[in-house]
Image 1: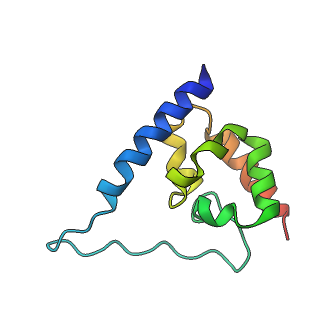
Image 2: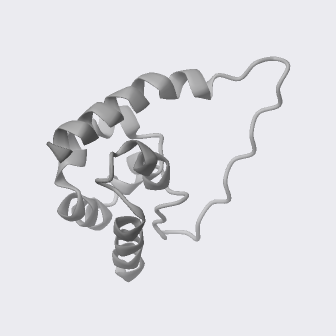
Length: 107
């Protein structure tokens, strides 16, 4: 049931994300977040699409959250921290901290 709720939340996020990404001529584009140190993976700043390009980081992510694999194409531009509020508890603060600790161990 939790996986179904997570899937539904991610589907809604994927549909809504392009609307939020649009820039209007009356608004200045938002500043890009500071890039993490070269090679460092961050739950706060690294897009999921970049995480899955790193085989070790991808394996770490999929071990902690196997159901995320079916949504890669929909959430590739989002960070894990951005996906968390839409995950119906599947990706909570404790899991984000645990993932970051595992990412920090990667070379």
